[in-house]
Length: 156
Image 1 (cartoon, rainbow, N blue to C red):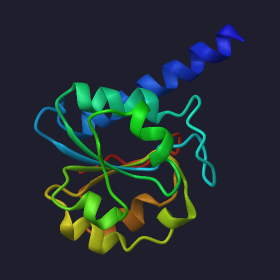
Image 2 (image 1 turned 60 degrees about the horizontal axis):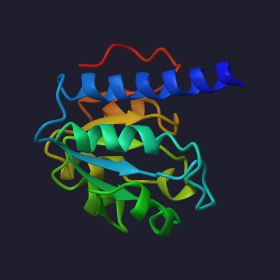
Image 3 (image 1 turned 135 degrees about the horizontal axis):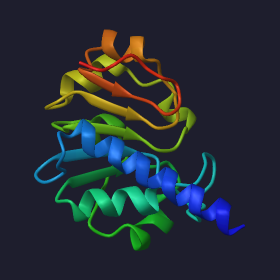
């Protein structure tokens, strides 16, 4: 069991490192939109959610973080201090430097990627649930796209 916990924590740290790379090595002064903070979709369960590691790292690194989660706000407000809660992904992503997908809610599977990218200050996406493809993200106007475990082509 301890090995599984260590692997899970290492994975969350690697995800955070991936976000740091996308932000040029620093979160300070960046606006980050986070889509999904619950452990999985269709629940308000926050236990062991990657957001509990990743979001505090963003906030602690000096990022301004906006969060959208269809059911996570009630639990998340106490667990994720220092974030702004939004109901709308497009509002959360407005003027953002990075969009991070942490939970694969159906509401996030049909987003207008072009509208999201157009509203961002720096259109970069970390799709940590592999909802979208590298090709779709770049075609929509994202300058950088990272996913997990897919071996996406090097980003621009």
